[in-house]
Image 1: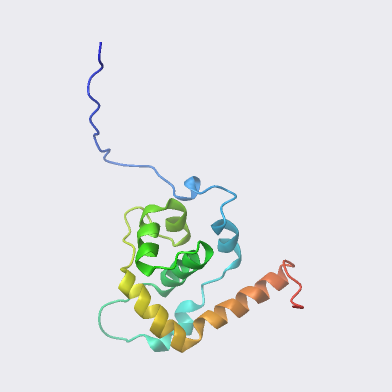
Image 2 (image 1 turned 60 degrees about the vertical axis):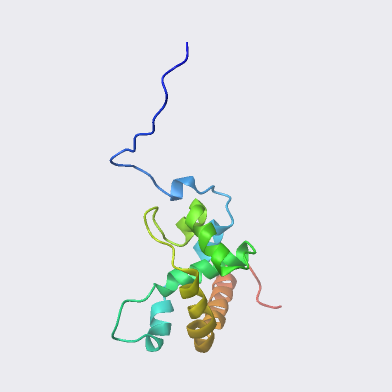
Length: 142
């Protein structure tokens, strides 16, 4: 005898943690531990207008950029699609399941404009290397 047709009935409430669905050995976990992005807002404050619509969080944009570098995603459009679908990428970018991924054009404009003009990426690289030296992960000699 054939069983009844299974019909999906959405639950009203979900108890779901992205962190629980990211494997412990995932590449983004140690990166998340050693990359300190808390200073980005202060560093970029002068490049944002005090009026108008609120911008996309610059920390989110840098996290997107790190995902693209780490996983060889060259297309900004493809990157936004991948972050939309991948739980580990969402966790690293601090996006909940219901949060929207920024449009690829917003990401592109910031990467090619605001971030390049500010030397932010150089600053982040230097502070990350300094932290790795402090933690004994690298010697800093070469």
